[in-house]
Length: 210
Image (tube, rainbow, N blue to C red; front, side, top):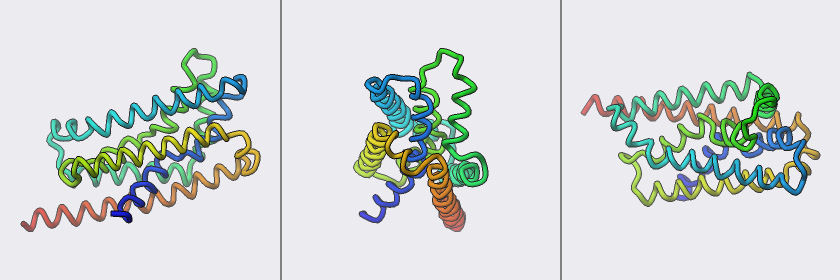
């Protein structure tokens, strides 16, 4: 059980990527008074948590309504996670790409706490997919799903704390350091994604044999 919880924590940490969110937070909060930055961090954390909880609770009902088998969803999810990981490794790093994306939208009136902090930085497509896979009703009990929800909340709490400490942290690791960490997280996520596909294929073969 401990090993499983640790795996879930690592997976959720990688897809949510609190460290990669630090430079994004600094970029969008640069023009905000220091006393008000915590409000942006809090609003972004609450919004992202609400989105992930929505999919944690209702994602399974959507799968069932569409008649999608679990192995098919796991394989598709693993492929999407792998593609997401490859963009983290070979594309612009999370801090670079999302800061640039915000700069392009800076003239608009959207709240920076919602975009790009809550989505797509914290509640990324990879994070949404991960919480759905980790709370599958066919494999996990309500207690296990509740524990997954608790782990997700713990990661989001870490993200909030890191955003509050963003300025001193980035001063130490610099933008290049944050980009390096984001790419390392991409490597870990790629391994997790491949493992998900392998396990799903094994389950699919076992189902066909039965």
